[in-house]
Amino acid sequence: MNPAILVVAKAPVPGQAKTRLTPPATPQQAAAIAAASLHDTLAAARATPGTRLVVALTGDLAAAADSVRLRRSLYGSTVISQRGNGFAERLANAHADVAGPRLQLGMDTPQVTPRLLADCLRLLAQRNTDAVLGPAADGGWWALGLRRREHAALLATVPMSQSDTGERTLAALRDKGLVVRIAPELSDVDTMADAVAVARGLPGSYFAHAVTAVLPSLAAAATRPAEVAR
Image 1 (tube, rainbow, N blue to C red):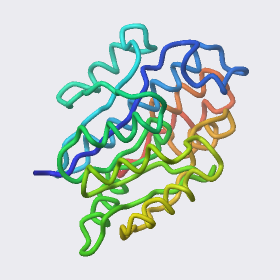
Image 2: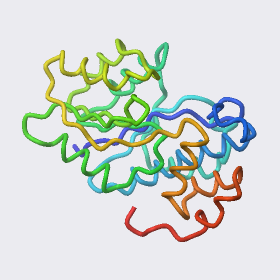
Image 3: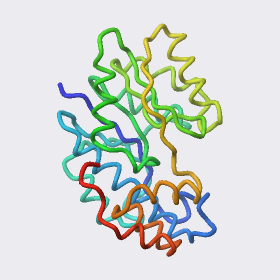
């Protein structure tokens, strides 16, 4: 069985998505940025060779920003519903619902590339490796690769969305006796400053265009053609 790329996502409904971007973004613009981030993430995952795409989704996709494009992005993937109380439990359950090795990420790192995702999966496939953790610059993590679904149960014990979530997750994995490889660090898109920094590195992407709708000063960078090898 090919390894899975598991994207855990929330429907980007205005007023419920990326609320830390408002202001300067309106709720509609913040949701559009979230939708673009999810679209670019799914595109990178789909383009990663030798993998299958699974999306654990919550929220009303029909009410989401750019819902038509997002439905097209989801076409051909396996979509499952998130279940559980609290984000940590939903993460653990999403892993439990996927068979085989998997690399899980969210929708806050549109700068991921097929090459980076493939590299993470190669780390996971190394001999005597149980897990791969991709740290985030804010102290959390952007990716978690696991060979065995039962190991995801420990996520339910880790406080999420904190400045030490990455450190605590790594400690929980190692306390379980797992051998963990560390992937490259990325920045999550949580604030407008994050969005601007990521958009500048992704000229021509859907994400960059969504950010320039809020900050037109980025338009020159956003309209340059994106590099082919993303």
